[in-house]
Amino acid sequence: MQLTTEQLGFFKHNGYLIVPGVMDPQLCAKARDRLWDSLPASSAIKRHDPSTHVGPFNEHDVESDHLNLRQGYRWQLRSVGTEPPLIDLVFSSTLQTIATQLLGDNMLRPPHVGGRPMGTHGAAWPGGPVDPADNEGARGIYATLPYGDRPREIDHCHTDGHPFNLGMVGLIDAVPRDGGGFKVWPGSHRRLYPTFQMSYDQPRIPYYP
Image (cartoon, rainbow, N blue to C red):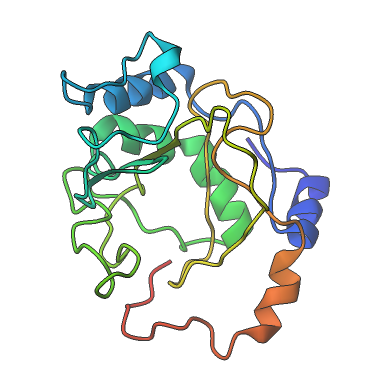
């Protein structure tokens, strides 16, 4: 699959692009299974009972391990990032073709099956975000538990404090309107880039494509 000139122009202007139907449905199903299988059998959250899915995680289900984080409404399974099914899903020929169009030739770093997943190094500094250095695959599978009746909060945004050239987020299941656990701010890249004092603000973290 090749992006059209119109799609490339949209990405350049808005800083994001939605491309439906580019992820293998069977591999998406395997990824969902892997996420659910990571829960302990004693978990209060039951896959086939949506009434148990509403967050936050209860005290029994909280996990602070950076490779399998479950806190509040966040569920971040990073340990799977270098497992074959997830690498096959994220590093498919279709997605690599799209990434190469956006970045140019020879800019993609190949994944390492069985390598170091993101979170191996823990936090970048005490109390800080997870250190992405030396991640050898995908970031992992991230999920946000439903908020239920909790009032909607004011939208907030942030920029990641580490260098990267392109981020891809894929939905591995159907989500309700305003769901998906990810939000973009169209055009923010053009407003924020001139405010950076340097290309990235953590020179101690080695640059990676």
